[in-house]
Length: 234
Ligand code: F6R
Image 1 (cartoon, rainbow, N blue to C red):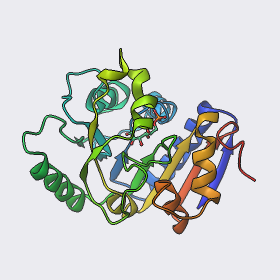
Image 2: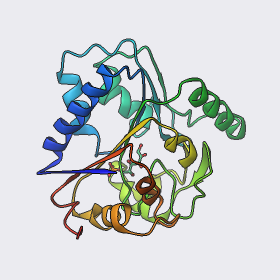
Image 3: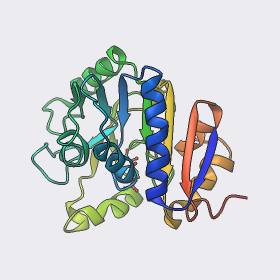
């Protein structure tokens, strides 16, 4: 695990963008992507650049159950708005929150991941240490699955919805096992509300109670943290 400390999310987005350019030079063709506030500064760098991404495939980590791409709180909508509409990709996969048979759908999504091994995975970090929507307690062997969102995640994500009661209670998420198969991983975390999770991820014991701590076991992981998120590191 390599740690890079930056001043703020803007600088962090620039650092991630430099790593991304290096990855492209090394032949990266498949990206694993995250939504949420964290990767926005990175996506802004990408969309401002003159990079041509039309031969890349992307596979997103997760989506709320019950929302389709026309809903502006869906992760498909988020990705179109922040990245795909501005930088066309060859193909983009985001889990289908409206799949009629979720059990079948998660198997299909695993097949997509198997057929397109992820070269470069972007991760945000939940305040409770989740990666994707792999909440505390999730086994590390799990692949794509339907998740009952933790109360803390519902509260943290309520800012994106009119009322907390509008936040979907379930999501489809790539599993920890699939995430860990990525060739390179870049985790970003900004803000003091992530400081405990950052400390646990980097310095705490490796435990399923803090899913991101498993990343300590790999040397192909780069963590970019701003001053506030790094404030509890020893
Ligand atoms: C989103 C995702 C989540 C977020 C995490 C942090 O696709 O997989 O793990 O990265 O919840 O969210 P933000 O960036 O909004 O603080």
